[in-house]
Amino acid sequence: MKEKLPIRMTILLSFFIQAIGGWGVESIKQGENTSRVLTSYQVNKTTAVEGGDVYDCIGVNVQPAFDHPLLKDHKIQMEPSSLPLRSYTDFPSKNAVPQVQLPIIECPTGTIPILRNNRRYHMAEKTIDEVISKDVQQEVAGIEYRDELYGTRAKINVYEPMVKKNSKDISGATIQIHEGTELGRRDGIGAGSWVYPSYSGDSYARFHVYWVKDHGPPITTCVDHDCHAFVQVSQSVGLGGRIQPISIYNGPQYEIDVLIFKDPKTKNWWVAYGEKNTPIGYWPNSLFQYMKEKGEFALWGGFVKGPTASMDSPQMGSGHFASEGFGKASFMKNIQIVDKTNKLVSPNVNSAHPGGTNFSKYTTDGYGHNDDGLHIYYGGPGDFV
Image (cartoon, rainbow, N blue to C red; front, side, top):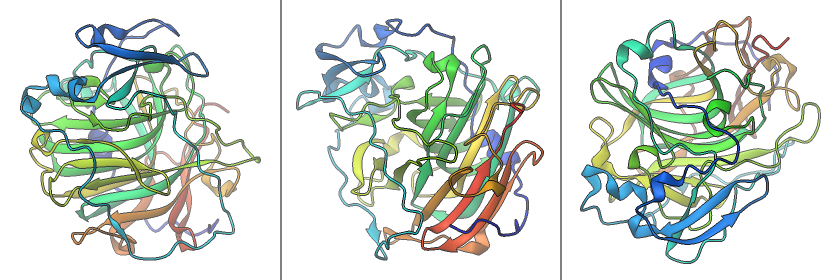
């Protein structure tokens, strides 16, 4: 990856900040049983994994998503009709990084794993006034992209940035797609790594998917199986689970390969991971008002958000500035988009704009193209100095 290229411009991030959405959940103690969401479901098997997480295996056809009013008569799609086609052959990078395996749960065929402890059964909704108020602060660093979008893929360098345990702040590294720029007229989806102590009950990096619904007040962000929206088909991937191993500053580096794409036939929005693009699940097209056909806005990078995220900021990425480069600063690489022909292609550099909101705390650097595709370094210490 290129380590030092001048930043072309600072992105206009007012929409980025709003698009992340507003969410609030009450804190929980490590290991506490929050399986109230499963009280009406038959649990086929319960599995404990390393670190203390507990997963319940429930029938794929009776998972929480099907309690959503819009999905009452939904017919589950067990696999994508097709995957986006690669338009090129991957070549070995001089900075080859091992892939992280997402948490694997051994659920019986016909069931899916749902995290019991460290999980919220209810997503509190925030009004628009609350989302944009001074009580919800945020900072971002990464790449803003505006174009027709039918999906996106990136390799995300995974760290565990420091977030104060007694705060309700979050530090995330994600890919996102949105449609719509007006308050009350937007949809968005995303996936990646979060450190969110007040949500998970710990300070581990965990893999989450999320849907941002802004169809008029309130703006709601639905995480994993919250809000009964995401339809999971994988019987082994544990959403909300701890990502291991993680990268070490000036040491071994690790990354996750994440793909979001629209099924060209069903128009459902899928999430897959890994070099083989293993499907995890999807958001049904019927949930969307403004992103039924395509997205128009992508975000690649890091963000911090919460009541003290600007005033008393968490770390972002590795907790080190982007100028430190490979092995020290967090990165995203092999960034691609899915075009209208269902092909993975390199983004148009004229539509991609790197930048951030507060360069005294978080920076971007090394933006460009090489064997790692479109890539960028980002992050910083926040107020952990």
